[in-house]
Image (tube, rainbow, N blue to C red; front, side):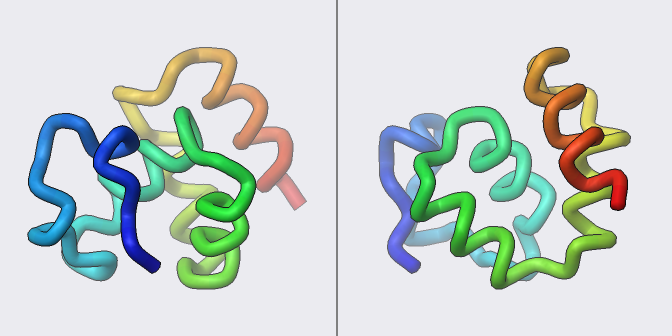
Length: 74
């Protein structure tokens, strides 16, 4: 999936690796992603990784963190 430059405003999107930069990508999509980006993330990454990032991230906004922690609880 090609990443939006506006989602990753602080980096060159052509240099983002979905495996190496998984936490960074997940955090941005959880906080600012559009529906299609969230769907891609949901299908691409393991749910345990999503849960880990949502619960341990120090960069997610508090409301985002609360929403995704509840969503991924099951």
